[in-house]
Length: 499
Image 1 (cartoon, one colour):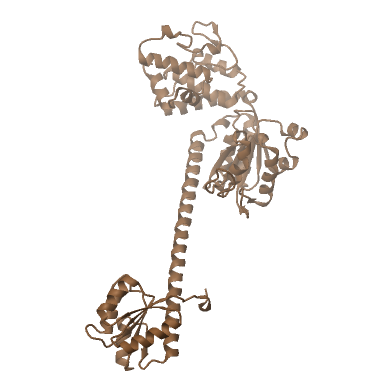
Image 2: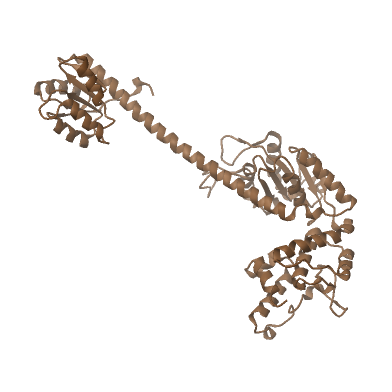
């Protein structure tokens, strides 16, 4: 803001002088200029008026009865309400000593008697403009400081969220590592070589294909956490689970007021994955209109939040996965061919478990050790008969099904040797303890008990309910816990009692 743009009309000026003639002349002169004038005839009266009226400038005589102008100025400097108010001294003497004392008392200028009207007006205007500019500058500084605080808070929040995302992802990676790819099969070795290449090339996009449960996300996590992006976030997104009308906002974010219910700005998954990896699972289910926008982001690295006037640049590696045949979807017009080629710059195929049966014993042992450590029990032996069943089973649910099957078997075995009766297969009959066959859906102990036959022992009854839930969820402990409204540790604790 330039001085010529400042409006000083109505500025409040306090005149403090014991000479009524001086007061009259000054008042008339200043009121003609549009200033709002207050007067006082003593220092004490001037202090009182200044404290209540909060003037923008004070003209203060030096020689007055009672406290003089210098002392009055010093007291003004001590009060919070007036310490920033500019004071111009009125003096009949222009001696150096008196001028110095005035500045030492806190004055900003002085005028000599008799007054020269133009000089007085010029000095008043100059100091009013300085004071007003100082207030404007202070206000701008306060606004800037507030914006800086908000920016720091946003940075801290983003950092915290990024750390949380990274922590969650890293905890999962540490828990699973590359467990889904333990073994010696030739197909597995090919995957490991591909992962090693992709860890060393941290920018290229990757398309991972394979049946459900083959470990597509494990491949993505291994690529991320073994690359130079490991310190950044790994953000997994299930494209099939995003509501169609919110998909663009979820991926790219939105500004406040962009649509009904958008009461605050929200970052999309792309921004949350900045300097890290975005894993788009079930990419084949992405709506067609969103595919074009995704392609644009992949090509130019700029996301456009819903409702924003300008885009935001992001630095993200995209790993995509699907269990469907994208070529068939392209032929059917459900998936863009140009997006396919952009995603599949490097393709990794996760083979089904039935094509790498030689890895089943090693995987089973690994999962036994992992879940035993979580449950706080020694890792049991896997009986030869049980192992034979595992090796002959087709595993339609692949590694995920094997993991769930082993977790439940460990619970039912109570930490002892895992036998055939502890294995509950999804689509094949399982052996009974007597050597016969029972349907897998029949469940374990208590699965077919009627309510009237339910034991009155609370722990035993809870065991039966848990085993029924496990049957319904096909051995998935986490799903059973959600079904029962409890958690995995509680299920472990209950099933361990009395084993």
